Length: 218
Image 1 (tube, helix red, strand yellow):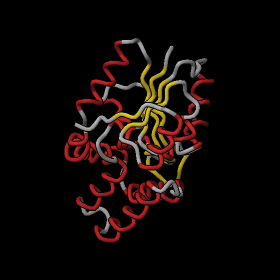
Image 2 (spheres, one colour):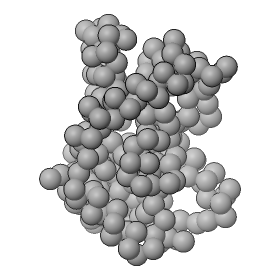
Image 3 (cartoon, one colour):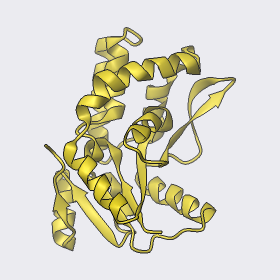
Image 4 (cartoon, one colour):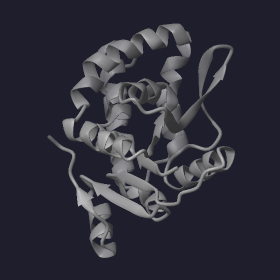
């Protein structure tokens, strides 16, 4: 089995679903729009700079959801998909996924964004295998904490190795597509690393190491 692994935000999507979820919550009046936007933007800049405190950020994302049941949250997510995720879909990304499927590759998304936000997006893209940050759930509600290792930076490598061990698979011939310097640890693990619409630091690394650089932007 050859794995074709994809980052999600700003790679397969033309935008960041995690950041967009914060905007959606503000639009719905669930959080204070001005306060939340400023904090959301600060966290996003930390992410771009490779300096994000992932536990603190996930607490920021998940705590507002603790007041809702999972059924209520799934209904909210359907509206979020229509209003914010659908506009991020890219034709070239769909073509790339089709290309790997046609070669018999097994597709996977690995993302720092939490499983609640990303599972429906992976389903929409027709990708079964998803490694995402897992929110802690107690008595049918999110607690605001993370369960296990967040799939961020080196945590992506840790979580992927766990998956490979559990499924008796390997990274032989694997591909990984990402836009972010945060994914350098995993890009260095695969036979076929590809920088997609990369940030400046990843682009410099890709040029230095002679990795392919491509764009999926329409």
